[in-house]
Amino acid sequence: MSLAPRIDRLDSNLLINGNFDFWQRGTSITPSGNQYLADRWQNHSGVTTNYSRQSGGPNLSSQFFARVTGPSGLIGLNQKVESVFSRYITEANLTFSFWAKVASGTSAVSVQVRTPSVVNNFTSSTLILNTVAGTATTSWQKFIFTVPVTNDMKSLGFMISVAVVGAVAATTLDVAQCVLLQGEIADPDFCLAGRSLLQEFRLCQRYYYVWGAVGIGGNKSPIFTAATTSQVRGALVLPVAPREGITPTVTSFDGSTSWTFRRTSDFAAVSANLTGFSAPAAADPNTFIVYLDASATPFVTNQMMFVEFARGLRFDFELY
Image (cartoon, rainbow, N blue to C red; front, side, top):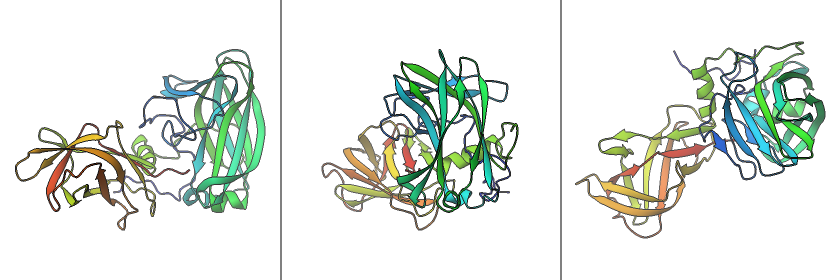
């Protein structure tokens, strides 16, 4: 039986990782631009902020919650709902609920909804809802808001955000248990859309996957082949189904560029300063030919070798 959840099942939460259980990129991030944070959650702040995973929450349904800390200005986070999910919405309204609090004083909490100009491409977007959902205090409280559904939301996908509005001093916003359900529901409970935690994580990996392999003497890749004297290529099979037809952004997990290659013939080391990674969209949904480019010419064409690395590669299939 497959562990992959059906993407057309929308009897519960439209948001993925609404309970902030998964943080593949790290549990404390100071983002640049529209960088992703906890899995599926993206920076929605107009100022420099820090996002971190915190233990606990408003009740026993949470193991973790997200904390956003920043100076005066707009601070918050958003999630983009892919059209492969939104096209199955049948209700006229959605119910968005979440728990929130601030570190001191009170702050108005806003909810925004945007639709992209092109399906799943948010480079350009249209604001269709911008409203104050209520006032956050220093105690956890639950916010419930009705979101009218438009045809563009269903056909193009959409972004929904929660943020503190008009903060006049440094502030901290805590957010937990985000739920987006079909229909108008008076007091929605937190849920994972009928998914187990494993299925929830598989959905996170649809958008972001950390690849690595363990071999004798450390972490080794499958066999790569030197296509030229400055580039090696190898096929990596991901055990999940990422977004199809997408050219992922590929980076090393720890940001390092100085890697060691070992020849398969005698396991001798070949050092290379890598200048880039790439993986064009796969013909097979799970298999990617990964290109590793070197700044010099350390390879012998057609030579086969392993790639030795500390933490592996990151594949980013996210919505931007």
